[in-house]
Length: 409
Image (tube, rainbow, N blue to C red; front, side):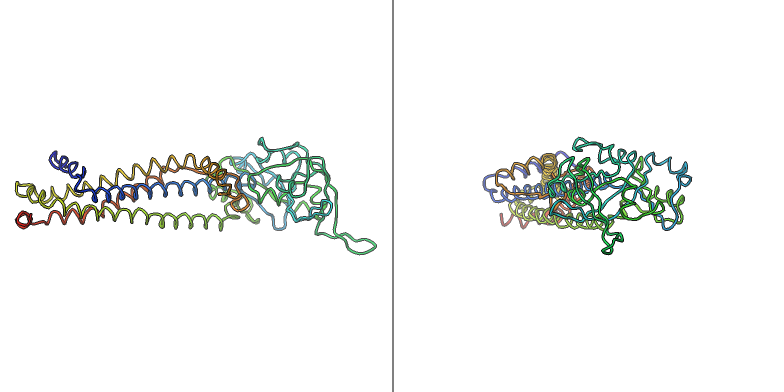
């Protein structure tokens, strides 16, 4: 426990006098350094959490949660039993192939995904305000393209394009690639430029005819009611399709999210050094304080104040500086994280620079997600570092010999 005397002396020593001006400067720099270190850590972690969450939402919103790819046998309705319907009410058959899209003299390679019209309207990506056109029209010779692709090829709804397949067709002049003309029925925007620029949707049967595919090649896309526990639900699907290849969106993007996790951990370690460096200023400040208060410490010891009380006093000074700086850093970091996108827009407009280019980060705005657990860990690390660096000066103050101190004072 901390006595009233220890509290009073602690706060008295914290109020530096004029002759302790240099000590006051060190304390202020310690406070600011720790506070900024905590704030920067919270901001960086929040932005990285937001980036990860936004990326997952975009990927999951565009792709199925679980996909079943048959090896040889066609996926039949009797395989889609009650077990699957317990975890999903949205089971869709699809197929895909790579083609070249042609518009006058411009051509581009894209990935085509085929759906029935009734299934096409169930896709989550088309249930938003940014979707243009009719999401129920995906019959023969109609195509739905991404916003970025429409910009690159200068396409609008109602325009016609030509798709060239890699599959050949025999003619009198030899083997030529299959070609077909399509009308743009809708334009979607997923939020990920890579998807919007490289993926298009056409009717399932039209796609199979264009690539000479069979019904046995169709995949089963499963959109889960609750996609959180993805691995457990994957095992349920695998039991229903033991001879087929079952994979999740997480499997397809495992390297990306592993890299994000490693980067997040490394950034945490590197930025923690800011707090560590700032905390070492506390050692300097407390050491100078002990030197300046040698006479006071000697008098306290002479009137019977125990060594453990001296340790508590100087230890508390360091902890108070570190804890108050941590609280300041939390407030600053959380506030900045909440308005990071607004600040980005202001800085970009003032200096006419792009701080978050879409073509690099695949997102149109800077995301931020405040994680209370991350804030708790950051605060805990900051306080622990402060506690550790406050121990040495406090022990040094307790070891002071009052006779020698008074003699030379």
